[in-house]
Amino acid sequence: MRPIVVRYFFALVLFAACLPFALQAQTQSDRPQARTDRAMTVAAKTLFGAAEIGSKHASESFGSYAKGCLAGGAALPETGPTWQAMRLSRNRNWGQPITIDYLQDLSRKVAQNTSWSGLYIGDISQPRGGPMLSGHASHQIGLDADIWLRPKTDRVLTRAEREEISSISMRRASGAYTNDRWTKDHETVLKLAASDPRVARIFIFPGAKVAMCKSATGDRSWLRKIRPWYGHHYHFHVRLKCPEGQEDCINQAPPPPGDGCKEAAGWVKRILTPPPPNPNAKPRKPKPPITLAKLPQQCSAVLSNL
Image (cartoon, rainbow, N blue to C red; front, top):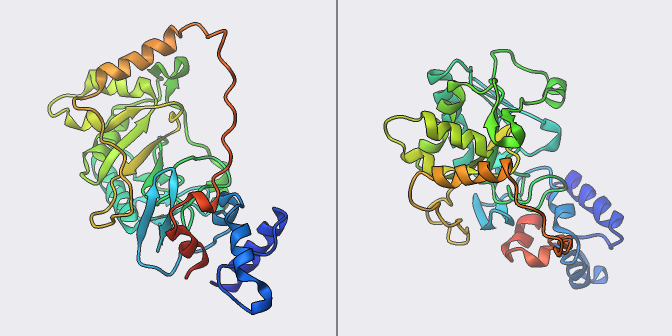
């Protein structure tokens, strides 16, 4: 592990009131087993959020999209001919090589088939995946990526602009409908994204799915992968299938058969006419943070670069 990463790990774990964490034994007096045991109880987001570079392993995803880690992560270059990575300060432009290839391929297709010059890419994963310090529950194994719904222009943005510029919301009526910023190009982008066989599903707000259900012509099989979900009106979320041969990567069950348009219409109906609140409903208790002990055992080696 590089020295800067080690120092960062130590500072964060000390902040969490634990002794310095290192899975690599140093001396007998360090009592490595005791330090390892303590590290297993620290919130995993603290540990994985401190990693600045990918691990030295061959690329592999361990666990599921919302409980796992990423070995041998690859970084999406900050700027390419048809893409720009956004929010660079987060250091979340890491993923499986298959994910990086997919995003570059999709951005080229978008530039060729729409008025957009390519794509603005949001969060993918942290350098070694795992739970994040803020935001997403998923994005942990390098196979999820957020793509902005704001059309990309030709101008190369500065690092500061990539922190300041926001995407653009496409929803109206709390997500029941698209607004006047939604265009045919947006549908084309989603169709291109979903038509790739590497894709498992894509999340976007319900009104967008219903709009595409109404306007799509010809082969509608790609609509099956477009899944309505909360939020997702500034960006859409692509989830790729586990790469072949990676037996410790857990795929999500495939979407139900059919185009899913009836289900999306049900989402819209519930937005427009929400059911009355249950007076007996008990508030949900917050989930405890995921610890290293709750992640696949390989994640300890990924974290320590062993």
